[in-house]
Length: 82
Image (cartoon, rainbow, N blue to C red; front, top):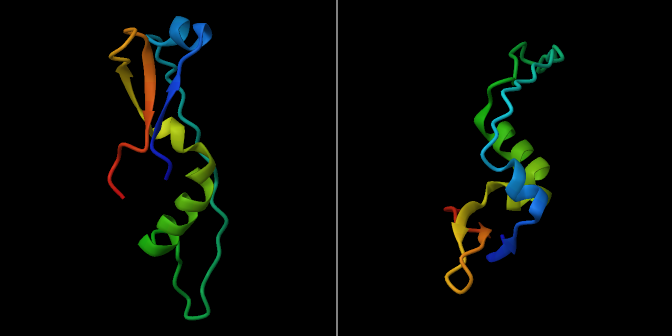
């Protein structure tokens, strides 16, 4: 994962303190394995799926911080543990 900082825009800063309380629920497809078990909570499968889906959005998992030079709020990407 790249480690760098992204500057926030005026739109980002205007919506920053707002919380949008939305939770999406989806029906799961009932898929059974040949042995008759469901793989819905298989940890390896979930980890692989999340890594594929979230890789293009690594910046969303960044941390908000202030730039030391100008004090502007920025997103520090790639700060989490691997």
